[in-house]
Image: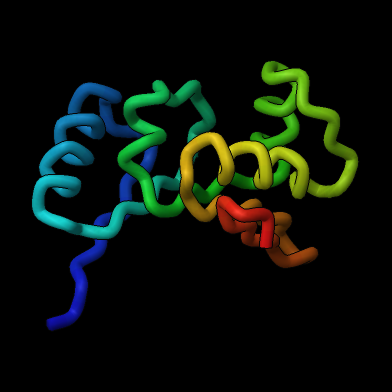
Length: 106
């Protein structure tokens, strides 16, 4: 049987997203969050995600808030978020492509 996936974004209320993530976790559904528009995720929400997608401009803003040094188009932040959330973090950079980092740093 094919696994189910759900894609969320931040124009939906955080409480609604959180409830949906909880239900997805109970049903073994793979979850992906596009962090746009950029906002702060709770650790609880982060723990439910399998994939986190963020663009490099928003990644830079979050890096500044988290005191993560990044001048590498978001790779440092992607690695930190991947490890913290035990997820795959994808940072998009428009015409420059994207980078995906696994929790183990690959």
